[in-house]
Image (cartoon, rainbow, N blue to C red; front, side, top):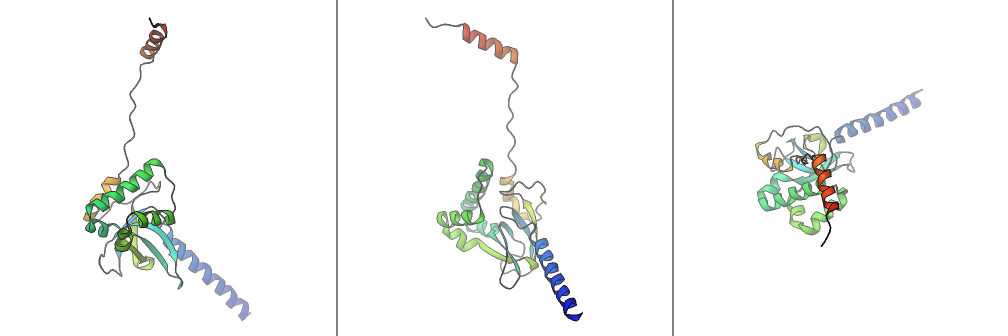
Length: 184
């Protein structure tokens, strides 16, 4: 009985470990903008990142990686505006891109952006929340609690176009007049 009990406990442990790892990675998907506190910080205790996703490392730890937007803002306001306009235009045009394509696009167009601003975070030491949908269609986000995150207003949802109301009778008479005219 000891062998089977150990085997079942081991299987349960693996399942329990996998369940906790999936709970950690639920909100760490490609395209969202995350903000929160990070316990193992070196330069920024409260980072805001454009998330490239999460992965499980060789040791079994879950890591989150992405572009640190506060660092990008400190490099140059033009680079931050370029990056935010890129996200905004991708979303407006409905461009479907995967993390690898997006990474290599950034690496070929602005290689110093990847070199200076790309970060990897241990998910067990982070408490990130989604503060902007970014490239995704997520509806529910949290309000950013960092005063440096004012640049996220640039990614606020664009207002829908308001189409003017058309008077059908006026349109009909205009079409009839145009049809009844003839060239001289």
